[in-house]
Length: 158
Image: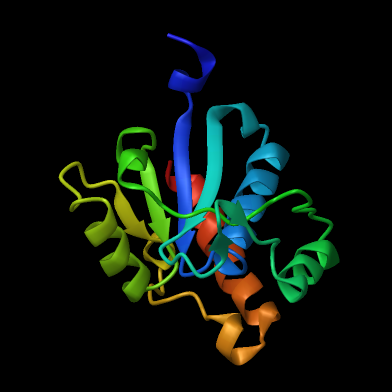
C-alpha cells in the first residue's frame, strides 16, 4: 500500500468549482494541517457543471472567493476548476456537496451512490441545510462561515 492509499480521499463539489468547493478544499486542508492531521487526507474539489471548464482548461477561483480565503490567511493559488467524472467514484472515499442540487447532480454523474460516499457538508453540523451560495448573494463572508463550520465538524467526525 502506498501513502495515497492510506489517506482519506475527499472531493468537495459545487456547481462551478470556482467559489464554494475550492473554498472548502482549502479551508479543510488548512484545518487539517493546523490539527496536525494534514497527512491523513488527500483533498480536491470539482464541479458538476462544465461552465467553468473550456477545452480541458479550468478557470481560476473566483476573485471574491480568493479574497475571502486570503482574509483568513489561506491561499488557493494555482487552483483551476475541474469537472467531476464518473471515474472519480473509485478514486475518492467521500464526495461532499455544498447543497441539495449538488447532491442530486453528483449522484447522477457518479451513477448513483452504491457505497454511501456522497454527503452534504452542512449535514456534518448540528444545523444542517445548504451552504449559502455567494455567486447569487455576493456574501462570501456567509459562505466562509458555513464552509468553515462544516469543515471543522467534518474533521472532528472523520
